[in-house]
Length: 339
Image (cartoon, rainbow, N blue to C red):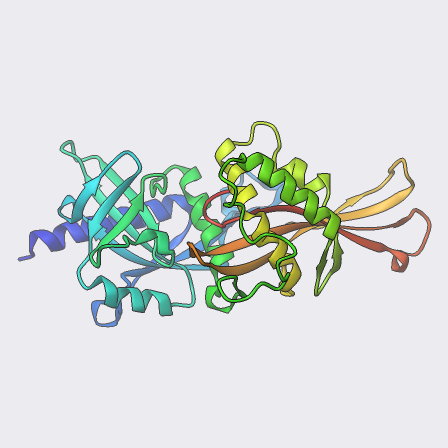
């Protein structure tokens, strides 16, 4: 004999395993005696195939990328406290104790919530358990689950989780910039665009960017970083949602500090080679990321990534050892919230 809650819980885990199998990813359950606040572990995988024989399934495989995500599973509508068009709030027992456990994990942690409607149709969404935005300020029992974070079989649902696993691994080791205590730029640039409510955010963004360009930027690892139209054109490009543009404006003061302070970096894209240019140069272009955890006075702490465009070039016919490197500020965003 089994209880109804155990049956529903098993249905939730089975649903999650089915979604991950459809994606080509893996799931490993954690036994109850060892769960310590987690029900399972997600293994991120990528499809591999031979370029000359893409359709031959016998030569296709799914390779582990190194990405891992801890999972807490909750199933059934009895957990629901309230919901609106943007989020579901669910009740979690001993939430404060579980938060301590989740925060100790060195890899990303999510809660996946599965429930069914009256027609037995499944719905599933997830929340980032390491984000303070997941928790309600005035409650020790509620978690907010954004309805935009769908956990369903369609392939587009796995993109945000893949990014979470890629950018949030070793989260605890990321550099910390605590603007509530210290500003490495010593006030040369404002730490926020929230002042002067009579001025539009776009105008404040323009003024900040112009001042940043005049002051210049130097990274402790790469050296000079160009602040010019390359970055501005990218973050304000046509057809980009207004909300994303405004988010980038608000993050510009943080981008200035990250470029100034952070020396650790990683490659975000493969290097591309460009030959036969009109200027006679051979160019190698890629993008690198600088990431930091940022603490602010009037805002939740957040992980912020700055993307730099890097160009290495030399004259056609010359030795590649003569290549010169230039870097541009390209964009800034909070991983998991989109670019």
